[in-house]
Length: 212
Image 1 (cartoon, rainbow, N blue to C red):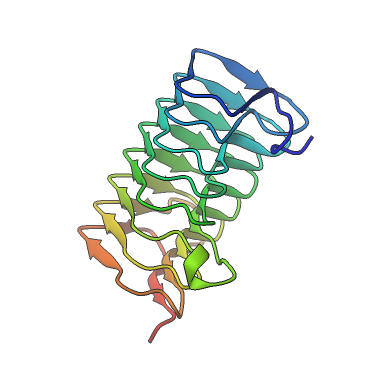
Image 2 (image 1 turned 180 degrees about the vertical axis):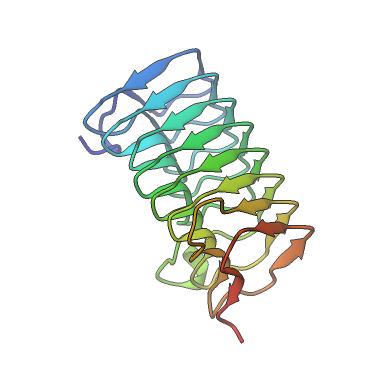
């Protein structure tokens, strides 16, 4: 069931909704999705083993707060969809998702992603998606104080014409052997990237900068 139309919990055109201590599990779609919903808070929830997205803020949803949730076994744990702005996602555990831990892309700007534990993503821990043009890219986002552990291929992947991303004090860790993985990959057209005090452990390639 497509997350733009229905989900285990589905909200549209709402404001000021608070979802707490709810578990969504084994749904054939997204766990929790909200479309055109401002000031939504999702805290202390579990979204487990859903067919698609664990949490899905979408369609210009402003100022969501996503706090202390456990997102496990979905295709993508936390998916920023379209025009999600001024969001705080912090202190979440995001584990064993089948593609990405966190995916952010289409005009998702001015968000803070901090103090999350993102582990065992099958492909990428955190991906800034490649959008069709510069105007649709996820600019002005902050990623700080996250632990990204044992991602399948890449810890953090910044794609497309994305600009003004700040990565501070993130730990990108690989404990599996052999270590054939990339900590941070920077796309050819990425600009205005700020890096500070990020650490890498156990990786074959710490930073793969495709701009050079």
